[in-house]
Length: 289
Image (cartoon, rainbow, N blue to C red; front, side, top):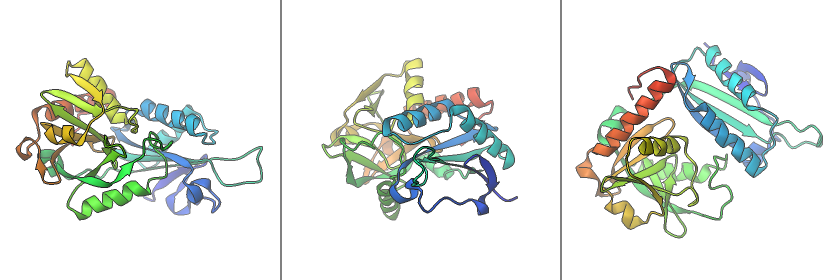
């Protein structure tokens, strides 16, 4: 079956999809994206993703004419057209093409949905190797806390990590604070306490990150959001990373530094199980990543 995509109010064959050569997202990276995951035909935490999207639309003045219900209906229609239950969903919104029609500018909305390709099982069983990113995150960059199309530096850093045998690379700010991974939020565990960087570091308000913070509080797991140094990072007992596709993934090694003797830690396992239970409650299925 030919893959279908949603593009500007229409579901069409992926091979026929095209955007303007004057699109501001293509030319200038003027746009946003969200990556979501569906389980059993249900998009997990969709409202949270849309909250973040619309907050960034407002903050960054991205031109948009689509409302939440239209986007929601488009996502579910696309899942149905592609006959997908468990899928990776990507939503891309740009301010649209440069145009002399200043009264009726049209944004570009592209949604794709493909069968989920899971991470290797060994990543979850044994944890991953992460590297220290050679680049630095600028706390004064107005895009830092938003999921924008200006993602090339992240992809470049991730490619470098892969070349070194790592699955993720950790970014620190220009003033030496732990920020996030290229494509993930970062958590540490020290003396049974969960630690993560504050949102005003600034970091992306990760959807999975926010859910885990809530689950920790609900289950009496001590949680502290703080400025985290490299010393804090290396002295932690456990580390794990999160995003909507990977869920919860243990970091067994950071460069040559090993956590928990290279094994998935007790609290990381607990958090992972709580997150899976949250998926089960919302989507009606037991996830087995």
